[in-house]
Length: 288
View 1 (spheres, rainbow, N blue to C red):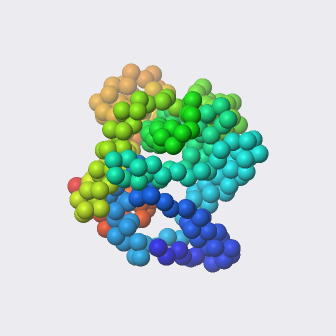
View 2: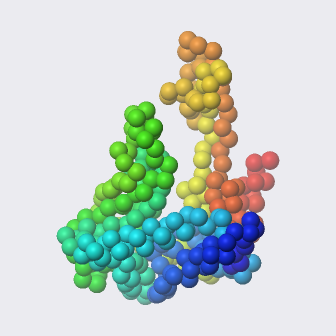
View 3: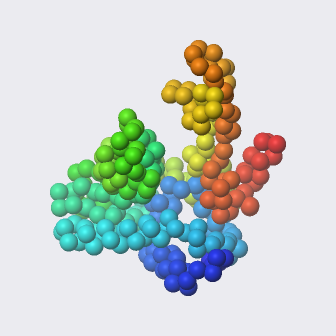
C-alpha cells in the first residue's frame, strides 16, 4: 500500500504511519482480529494491496491507537501485569494468532478500545465481546487463568457538557466495560464459522458484507419542532406513518426530516477496497 502526503506535512508523520504499520508482529496463519473483520474486505485488500493508496491524514485513528497502546503497555508493566504477549493456538489445523493488551495478576483480561459515547450506550460492540472471549479461550489453552473480561473504553467524543446535560451519559471519558464470558463450545463454534468464511474468501468465494460490517445506518424519519435542528424527544422513527402520527399528536408546529440510510464504511471511503467491490457497486445501482 502506498501512503501519500497530499498536504505536505512533516515527513515525521509519514514515517510514524509506516512505523505503526510495520510494528505489527505477524504470527500463525491468521489473527483473531482479521477473522472477526469482513472477509470480503480482508481478501480484496490482499488481492489489491499494491494498488491501495491512503493519505497520512486518514491514519489518525491508527496513530492514536498505537500511541495509546504503547503508553498503556508501559503502565501495565509497572503494575506487574502480563502485557502484549502474543500467543499462537492451533485450532483444528489453523494456527490462530492473538495478543491481549494485558492480564492482571488476578486474571482480569483487558482490551483497550477507542470509541464513542454511542458505543458505550450500546454496551460495546459484539465484535468486542467475541474478540475478548476468543482471547480468554486461547490464553487458557496455553495455561493462563482468566477470571473475567473487560474492555477499557477511551471515549473520544466525551464532554463535560454532555455529562451535565444528558440523562444517560458515561461518568468519565475512560470507562471499564465488563464483558460476559461465553461457553467454550460457543467460542469454538464461532471460530469454526469465521475460519470457514476466511478460507472460502481465500479460495475466491467472497462472502457479502453484513449490515454491521458495512456500518449500515437505517433510514429514519425525524419529527422536529418547526425551525429546530434536533428531533423532538422520542420523535425518531423507522416507519414514516409512525412519524406522521407522532407529529399530528404534537401541540406545536412540526416538520418531518427524512434521514436516508447509509453504508458508512462504504460511502465514507473508510473501506479502501470499495472500488473493487461488486456488492457495493450493486447497492449503489439499486439506490438510483
